[in-house]
Length: 264
Ligand code: NAP
Image 1 (cartoon, rainbow, N blue to C red):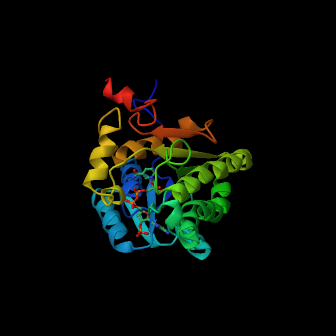
Image 2 (cartoon, helix red, strand yellow; image 1 turned 45 degrees about the vertical axis):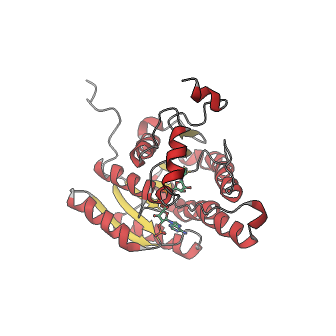
Image 3 (cartoon, helix red, strand yellow; image 1 turned 45 degrees about the horizontal axis):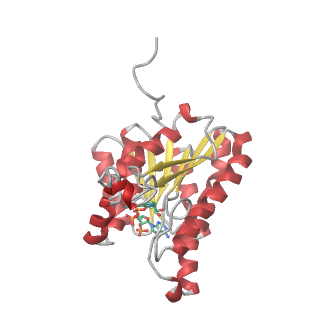
């Protein structure tokens, strides 16, 4: 008799999600916790993350927080150690922390470039590296990287450093997927389009309205749209999928020109 659920339960598995105080990371934390995962939320500022962890616990879930800057190797080590001490190991790692300040090429400083690459790309490597020993010990693991359509598929003025960091995450992912395959650890990436998060809200109402008109589904994504894609990649059923990407964008990358949307 088949169980009446879509996917095998992830109940009791431990998830680390970086950048979990807001936006997509918070959405991932909430969705995984609602499915019974034990969630460690990492972010630099803990006030918001603590609030989310408290909400999860109020709803009957298991969650706690740890302060960490993913660009700092010592912080990343502490995140992994905290998960092992509090929850006895690590099953799933969502490398989600990211920043997207804009700067056109002529105005972009070396420091601007380093900041974005350090958080988005080096932060992904450091997070994975710190969790490796614990993931290997389990004999099974999931690493899910939040990349973007920007960089791997598209471009946008002001985000050359951001696009490079997000495309770089995919280069990292593909070799990591090969290296970790013998350990039964899969490494995959999500490529969100425009998702309504605190970070995107800060880009302003005009950006959001214009972007909405460029998306065939005529809405920005929700953090749950991304979180459920992550949940699938974390499932037992996705065990044979590694080194791959899932675009979560309401069709944003599909139109071959603005005419394709105007002709709808
Ligand atoms: P957001 O609303 O601005 O939230 C970003 C999160 O990352 C916050 O929790 C922030 O908390 C944390 N963070 C930032 N720098 C960090 C650092 N150095 N160390 C640890 N945590 C850090 O962003 P979002 O829109 O949810 O984006 C999350 C991820 O999705 C990013 O990787 C972004 O590139 C990607 N993405 C987003 C969209 C979108 O439309 N929203 C589209 C494509 C890809 P603290 O500031 O407290 O550290």
